[in-house]
Structure formats: structure tokens, C-alpha cells
Amino acid sequence: MDRLKLVLQYFQSNSESISNGICVILALISVKLYTNFDFNCPCIPQYNKLYALGVMFVPPVILFFLGVMINRHTGVMMEEWARPAGNRTKNPAVIKYLFSSMMQRALLAPMVWILVTLLDGKCFICAFSMSVDPKHFTGLPNNTGMDLVKIMAKVPCKEDIVFRNTTFHKAVSRYVRCYSQAIGWSILLLLILLGAVARVIKPCFNHASFLQTRYWSNYLDIEQKLFDETCVLHAREFARKCVVQFFEGMQDDMILRLPLSPNFHAKNNHDEYEEDERLHGVTRKEQVDHLLQTWYQCRPELDVTKTAHRPTQCITWEDHKGRIIYSDV
Image 1 (tube, rainbow, N blue to C red):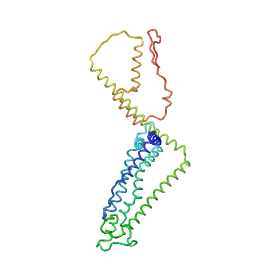
Image 2: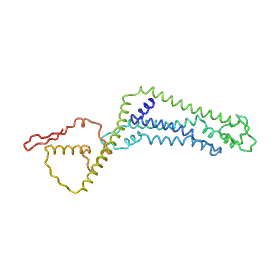
Image 3: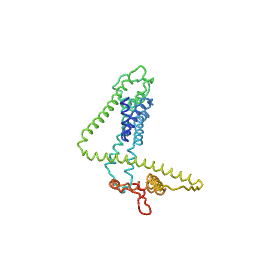
Image 4: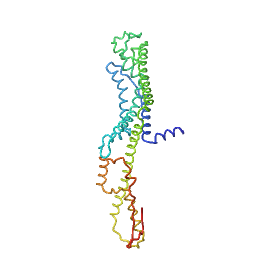
């Protein structure tokens, strides 16, 4: 249970971990789908290969596009690639890194499906049983009056009446399945070797450049998240003030005269300042539209020195003689 909690915490730590978790789940789903899939070869020369190759490659294409669609890096990459340059120049290395990361995760589930089908061998037998030379096997049914091509096309259908009292279809199936499994294990070995080689030679390249690229790719992801969260907070406060103003406008005007305390103006102005601060000075629809358009067309430059050294705002109330009554920093 503790290990499961650690795994869940890892997958919830950041968007990259969440993407990894989703890709692993997709790979497991692909295995489960194939094991529950009832594969029935049509055993017709014109359709065997079409059906088998369709089962082998159409679901991986669907899984690939599904992996691309649910990967957060896809949206970040496309936004970075399509946005106008504005004050912030585009970094092609970051776009390439996001594209590579997206492709690696999206290809996981399709490769698992293809490897499982090759190691199982049913699709390969259905597709290529007609390509086997029957002279290498004994027990070929020759008293059925059928063409040789049709007989070989019925090899995947082991319960067919043509192969009664003969082991011909078993021998051919074992032969084709061996080829299928050999191809599957070879692909798996090649992928492992490529991963190992990439892992070994990775430090030989400019590691500082890789760290910079990874940093700014993470920055783009976090920046988009923070912008969305800030927009939600601003929209919530904007909607709250609009609703309050609507209900206040429906009430009758009331005048209530009470003695004014010395700090009333200071407190009232301080509350209004806090509300304006939450709205960041954007209080009209036109301002909001202009702000969002500016964010899209001209992202701010990556320099926070102006924000870090901006002057502190100080509000001071004085009496008629110039003496400070209340000061708010």
C-alpha cells in the first residue's frame, strides 16, 4: 500500500509525471483490449491479409492519436509554435524537445499493441498463411477439390472441415507463428538497445543546453497553468462584482446619517484598494478582451527585474494642516 501511495504521489507531482502515468495506463488498456478481443480470421483469400493487417495497425493509429490528444505537451508545443513572436523570441530547441517528448509518450501504447500481436501470432498467421510453401509440410488435403490458395487461406480456421484428421494446419501455424514471434522479439530488443545507447551517449552531448531546453519547456507549461488559474480568479472576482452591482442597483436609495469615525475613509479606501488589486485594474469587458489579445499576440519578455524592483505603493491621508492621519503601505 505504501508503494502504491508513492507511485500515485509521483504521478501527481507535475504534468510530466501525469503524462507518463496516462501513457502507462493507455499501454495497459491496449494489452487488456487485445486479450479480450475475439480475433476471427475470415479465411478468405481476398480478405485475410486486409483483416489481419487492419487489426494489427488500425488500433495503434487510434491509440497514437489518443496519446497525442491527451498529452499536455501537445497543446503547449502547438501554442508555442503558432503564437506571434512579439517581445519574446521563439526557441526552436524547446519546440523540438516538446515534440520529442510528446512523440515518445504517444508511441508507447501503439508499440505495446503491435508487440503483443506479433508475440501472439494470430494476426500474422491470418495475414501470411497463404505465403507459405506447402511443399515443406506433410498432410496437405488434396481430395477437397479446392484451389491451393483457398486451402492455405483456411489454415487460421483450425476447426474447418478441410483439416479434419490432419495436422497440416498446425504445422503451418507453428511455422508462421515462429516468424511472428521472432519479429516481435527483434523489435523489442532493438527498442531496448536504442534506449540503452541513448541513455549512455546522452552525457556526451552538451548537457547544459539540454538542461536549459528542459527548464524552458517546463516554464512554458507552468506559465500556461498560472495564466489559466489567474484568469479563473479574475473572472470569479469580476463576476462577483457584476452580480453585487446588479443587486445593489435593484434596491431603493437609502440615506443613513451617522457620525464619521476618523479612520472610516482610510478603512474604506483600503478595502476598495484590495478589491482593485484582485482585479489588477481590469474592470471592463473591453479591457479584458484587450488584455487577452495582448497576451496572445505579444507575450511578456522573460525578465522579472522590473517586477522585482518596482516601487512600493504608499497611500497617506493628511489633515488640513498637512499632518499624517493614516498611512497604508
